[in-house]
Image 1 (cartoon, helix red, strand yellow):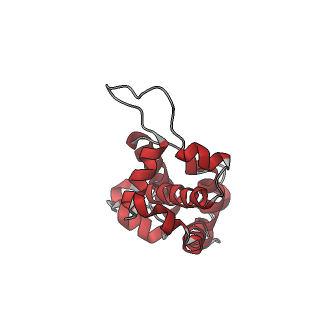
Image 2 (tube, rainbow, N blue to C red):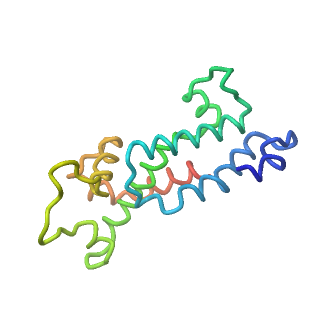
Length: 165
């Protein structure tokens, strides 16, 4: 982010659309690399979202003194929030895994169950399945209807292109 300040973010010759595309290509793609399988707690999600909004404010030239709400910053940048990006990537990957043939290792790991052992009673660690269920709820998708929803892969591809491109 800092290396691009002089050449991109502070360059008045570049349009805002170009700056947003550079941000998506250089910053977001590196930041969210392999984020489909992350199991993030709310604190980590908030920190990623703060980083995202801080960068957008810097690019757009919005200071804290301007008192611009986060929703307005995202609307001006024409980008979704970090939580929406993470959720979308997870749901697209989940749809891919559901469509994979039986016997593939990714599908076996997602649907597999441990034969022995249990989770601690005190404060159990967050599992990837828990994150997937949370993302399905936020996307208004019933977990029981996941397999029928996953057959519509074209809509997922179109949405991911519109976010990244």
